[in-house]
Length: 113
Length: 115
Image (spheres, rainbow over the protein chains, first blue to last red):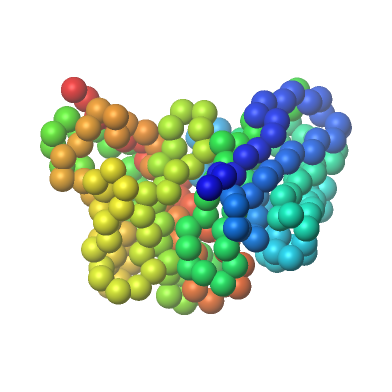
């Protein structure tokens, strides 16, 4: 069983740039969620994708956007980066229609200078 | 609105002693409750969950948690702590009436087990 994988693991950007983070879901899972974890805080829900459509969104501005592909992998895009976007971005997969837990990847640590 | 509170930033316990990490929650419908553990610079690992049924749930690495509906609590426990249990622990809740799989996380509790 393949777990959730994310890339890149670390990256540094400057304010105003754009970034794309990638996630491959666990085998058999069809739902992908993205979370932002700022230093010293718990993860905050950004959004979730199911059947290639956004299915739930947290309190994040439109410059945070995403995609889900037919193979259930996903991308998180952030435009016009701000210093406060520096965080660990976590991808999690699950199987729709279950009450099961989320399976998280190791995360992508973004630093905005 | 959904929320999770972890009142302790840090819990210190000696190896071999029992440990408890506290969590209280607030949701509109029935809660689905979870505990995750995070090691430095790593993602979150699932420990255990409560969906329905027995109020005492057992999970990975000898951890267990007790669901208390009247106190809206879901405290994490372990009878005998190990130094390797030292990590950051997060409680999370999902509202059963929420069609998304959104988890609301607490702020985390750092567990330090001293030898």
